[in-house]
Length: 258
Image 1 (cartoon, helix red, strand yellow):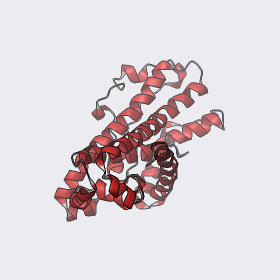
Image 2: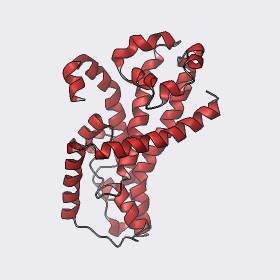
Image 3: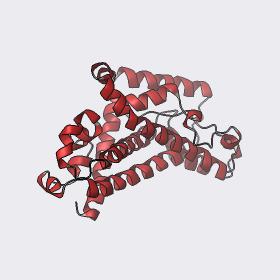
Image 4: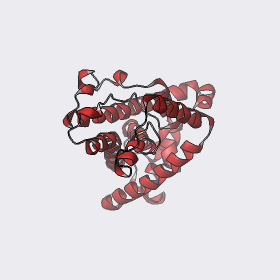
């Protein structure tokens, strides 16, 4: 991303006009889902602190948000939760932990579905037939997906569009689907302080592993160093994204016959 900004500042800014809303919405819905499920489970902490808000500024973590823009996965500022208020202990903790990633998965599926519907009105039928179907435009690894995602390739994509203005809608949907899936899978990694750690602790360890705030902060620092100094996390999340999207997109395209 930094190379992109240096080499093509205007293209980068146009790219971010689509990516920024996708990142902010995905992070916001993720955290509000945590807080809402916590409230329904008996813990009003997030509500009392004003975190059941759709204002993205209340949820953004500087490093986690930067990671979302650069890598396509990251985290928001965790919603404060007091497990002592839960009515059903570890069961409620599990539900709260799964709320954010479940919301992102639903948003990924919905945005993929909408991208297919938009594509039915957007792409020339002859182009779909010649290029092997809509997967050429919607699969994360396909050339058509990349050409649509970056505004500087608008001229390349234009000949296959029968409704050109829908490209703006489609770009947002492609960013939104990719960001939500990346956020979901990254947060499912069983590493503190990510949601996946709580899920593993609640399901497999029955909540027996209790870590202090200091340990969580140290683990988060180690995670940040690992993310920005190696490509390990990127490879793991990218592989998961490819696998999940292949199943979801393939199933939806069969339903629509495209």
